[in-house]
Amino acid sequence: MKATGFLFAALCLPVHTFAADELTLSANQKQTLGITSAPLPSKQQGELAGMPALVVIPGNQLFTVSTPLSAMVDQTLVGVGDSVKKGQTLATLQSPALAEAQRGLLQASTQSQLAKDNMARDEKLWQDGIIAESRYRATQSQYREASASLAERKQMLKLAGMSDKSIAQLQSGNSLNSLLSVTSPIDGVILEKTVSSGQRLDAAVPLFKVAKLNPLALEIQAPLSSTQGLKVGAAVSIPAYGASGKLTAIGRSLSGGNQTILLRALINKGTESIRPGQYLEATIATGTDDSAQWNIPNSALVRVEGKILVFVETAKGFRPENVIVLHEGAQSSLISGKFSGTEKIAVQGVSALKAQMMGIGGGE
Image (tube, rainbow, N blue to C red; front, side, top):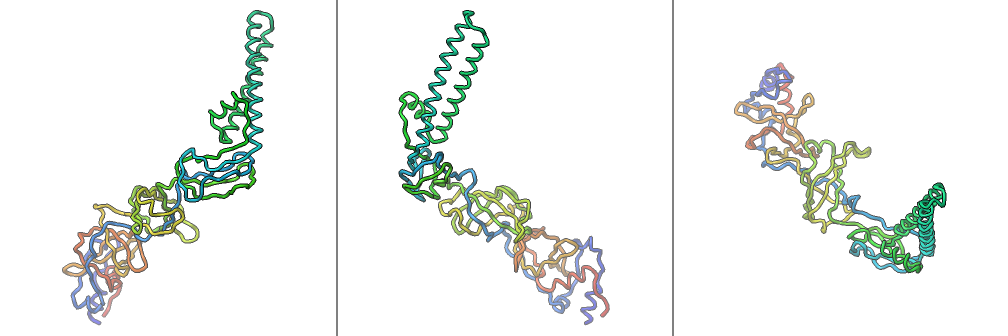
């Protein structure tokens, strides 16, 4: 009891100076108060391990291929999982609407040519003084309208999948064709196929989903306390699959349900080992060689006035030292601080050290 009374009657230190003051304790006092010390674990590079993550496809690498016009599926040429090249035909459709659009183009082409001839004739007559300028201006206006209509019809056919070469051949040959080819917009892989031969479709019905699968992205859910010190560009790895990449974004708001922050990463190495929609665990680097970190038991941490401390063992007792908690787990936490790595810290009985530091206690 006397030893205990002596301990709690020790110096009453101002809280704002505790991180620089040494607490004097004898070996007998340490034993009486149940204070146990342990060496700091080996210095390690900072990392957040075991972060739950979902593999997703970056938005600019996923395309939905739809039917541009109402049609019937004549033939599908690819299936889910097939690799395709840009411009490769994925399916052929029979579309009366395509033949109607081609007929509209031929009609607009004829009207545009007629309007052009009329404008050329009226320009000559106006220059010779045979017709008024107003008539020539009216003919010019008709030609512009006809040209705009022709351009509109061409654009409609381009949206339907016809190339400039095919449109030029149509204008020169006047041969209508109801066969519509649907092609891939990128080099990629077929992720979804929603149609089969003989199916009748309205315009804008999805047919395929095509995606480029390298690189892939991760959506990582991280506790708020774990995001301190994280920076865009930090290394991200998936140890179980040998994949790696970089952190690209750190969310600014918390999710309502589990109070986590969404982190996004881009994985550009080892993507062949992972799949979109896959749940896995990722590791995020949180430090460099200049910011060594340690994983210590939570029992060693003390919280005082918004600060977090550990007690470093000295020749005379213990010295409180400020630390930063980078990731707090159920049993242990990842910290950084001004340590050489050879120190021993109190891991049990820290409440008694906290009491002495704050000047709490007294009497016998």
